[in-house]
Image (cartoon, rainbow, N blue to C red; front, side, top):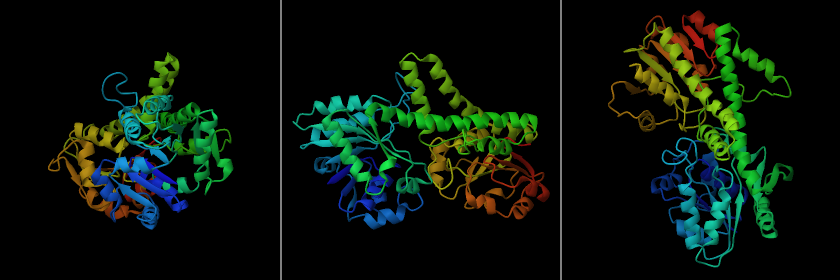
Length: 452
């Protein structure tokens, strides 16, 4: 068997590497038109940072795992084709700001229809709105060849930072197929691949539409929990309750559970906001106005949480941060990844720049080039400086803002950092990872999310 994955991004690369790792008899090829990205996958420094990814890729690469820009050959030779391309929120036309932009999905389907010479199983791996498989199927069925195609939905449920763990031991593998003998045969073919290492009880099969909607729903529910606890964090600050204590208390309720109840400056990443907005658009499309408004509030709360954090900083720093040096620790949207997509740090830094602050940034995995690009500033902008360490960023600072929960920030020598800052020295813990009483004894004026 041969597998081709179109798209060498955060989903396609690690997922295909794991399949190659667990199925040495299957030839897996990842194709992408981005030559620079493919070159990185073939180099000693992969384009994606994930714990354990390097070892898996290096062990299988050039044996049964290949990365190539030859899209046509990858499609032609494959028995199963995964589509794992970007589906960003539309910035133009109908549905701008909410609907998913499916132009890359359609281009993939048209390319498969154009070059395929044998029957194929086509697998949706990208996060897609419900009923997208129908569009793909229509395009494939108009192929100039006489090939037959089966379209499956196999959404990813990876959490960046733990992607390899999630692939090795997933909560579930979801596969949606057509309710026909041909569809069941295609579904079983994909089931048998995952069954090489995933227990049978964790492999769930549904119809295509349920599979597509399940992915959006899962991310919407997770985002909702974060926005819910962040809403309570605002009330905690007003009433002098402690949001961590509240979260712990409600998390012990077996009906609620403790996961995703960590208050912070807001959620980020490539999926949560995009998928919730897509869900909002779908509800609006089907005339479900009240349902759409309900889910849209999840996004509004996330935006509000970011604004609240900056407002609190400005207010605490005597109602102005103009000309003041702010040390920003962390730029990735979460620890253990170099992904900055929709990172709260981007929005907070932009707001601080609007307030005319001077920011000194440090992140252990995000490049200076990426930071400048995300902030929309040039490398010689005097308001933005990239530090090589947390300690360097904090020298002479008026305040510190911790925006990513990197473990190394917990181990910093804050006595030395405090000594090298301007006084009074302010610290704003946007991830609630530090011991505030200890920091206050050192001399910091400390503030955290949902705490006094």
